[in-house]
Picture 1 (cartoon, helix red, strand yellow):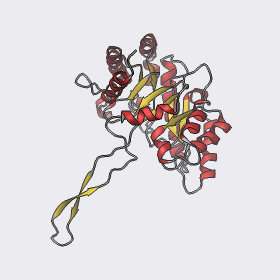
Picture 2: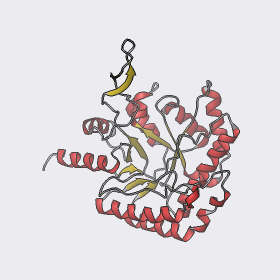
Picture 3: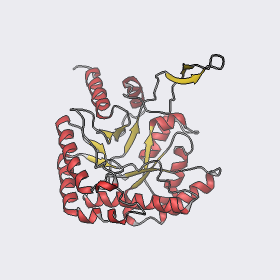
Picture 4: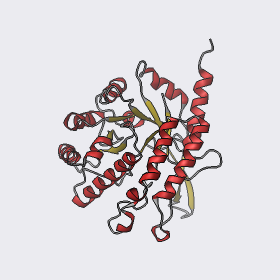
Length: 312
């Protein structure tokens, strides 16, 4: 089982994830590639075998009003091939997860067109790195728009019209409010796409499927020669202090509020993770940890698990 984390490196003083300069400064994929080389070196030192690259790895790569940025993958093919070979040499599994603004099932055709362009670009990025099919682009179903059936139909129709590289790379994840595992399983039945099981999302939006059943059904959508991956996170439990104006004095006061449990915690609750793994006995998969503390959360969880293993 490989553990991974998303985008930002916090350990060793921190590392950037991609070229973050604004368009006026001429950001470029070549800079992001150089940054990824440093990240891979860090991952090797820390024995971390999975990593999610930034969705902005190709700066402005699909921006409709900035065609000067659209050819970066072609300009960097040899560099991409080299850094892909380095990731393969190290055995590090890479992936991408477009932002929440990538909505393939949007009612607005222009939003959907832009989403398809983003999914294709990120798929072509992984292709140019010559990575295997386990390197995936994770997306959500999108918006509900008041009609679940029509929203699922729009997603499947547009998924089937995606160019081949995107259909080969794109995988679908359940979410915490609108589309649960049962919904993504319906999409899999129509499209054949692989599914990502997200633990926290399922606990918030389980539908009628048990944890064990939902996990196993998602893993079964992957070919037997590929290792599935799942997402795991713990909910925030900290008190929130919100500033309010006192209705009598009109002074600003701090009012305690309960946590938003749909948000990711800074670290993974190791006891929660161990209880989850009881449902996964005998199953093979990799785990992308989604925690605010990034690699520090991964290292802390791994240390706890290693220390909690019974001695022989």
